[in-house]
Length: 385
Length: 129
Image 1 (cartoon, helix red, strand yellow):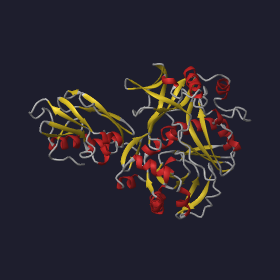
Image 2 (spheres, each protein chain N blue to C red; image 1 turned 180 degrees about the vertical axis):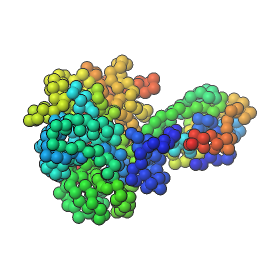
Image 3 (tube, one colour; image 1 turned 135 degrees about the horizontal axis):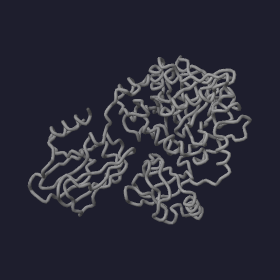
Image 4 (cartoon, each protein chain N blue to C red; image 1 turned 120 degrees about the vertical axis):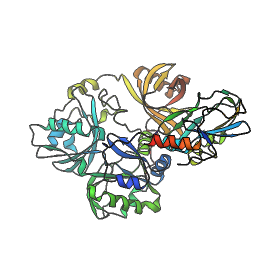
């Protein structure tokens, strides 16, 4: 049932637009955000087959500048930030001294010593504070600029075609995980080819005052191509199909990047020391105690966050994210499995028994529903030849 | 929000259409909107005995799951198999093609405890506040 609305929720520059569209709004990380406009399944399918338009203005935008900005970020984050070329972006993480994940981030290198760090809404303040602390003593400034940015994402196979009508930017040359200043519909933006849906798409950072006009221009330009506005419900089902982690579900302070199968973002051998290095170096050499896996339901009941995974009827792990997959027409889940159970399930999969010969299940409100181990991601888009 | 006059309701957001001691049951327009897209309905099976106020099934949507509560005592005579094939009917036509199951009532009397359309409309107005 609908949650009571709190007066304290932050509104985005597009909140009035969502309300005029009749969106169902939800409280997300202190922000009043569109959950869905009409049907979240239709919104999900539009992104897979045409395009969807998202308001992501709740995301945290932190600007790191100064002569030693890159050195400060090399020390603050797990990746080799100095190696990012201007105009490119990188998916990375900030961890605590013990290696626990504080947040996952996208870092855009705008200029040689000018970085835009995009943090999850729920962690933006923590990340800003932590970055400032870690930059202390260096010629680098960290500013939380969240309220200076609106963020609109256009995602889906028709995105480039729709966007090309509104910009002179050469989208063919704008590669995945690249971003640069440009103009869309005559408004200055930072245009990036990034996303969280498993489809091609763009994220458009702009001044809040331009957001309503940009939203409207994109809506009109996309109408004939089947573009519709899409809410957080579709965003979550899209990223789950794409096997992308969500902070608070697959990632948290108790987990290292290695636990989430994302050890590739950690650059242990970079020139700079970094916070968490000793703990992560130690962890990198050890076998995993738990493994993040994909599971597909063999019945129609839907696994949810927190449900127990069973092997032979005994607890073997926990579902981190679960839902109905509109694209596959089946329930899907990501879960942490204990390493021994993951090994048994993987051996069974390799022997042609993805359901572990009937031994793999999820406890769905008291009933052991059989599931199949499924390599992530559940969905991968077809790349154009 | 549609609340048809001729139906009865439960506080748990089921609707009930009674005719000739048979109750047809579904979930309300308000409930389907709150749930979001329905992806699976687990209704009580035909032939099973049900008791008013007891949970007798589940409605799964993309984001959540909620219990179905039985509005009256009786025996389930029919389950809507079309909803099993296409759970989206619960969203697109909650009072029509999206009905869930039928109960042969134990008593010819009006089942106790059901809400009128006006009472239910007031209830959902309160919940929305």
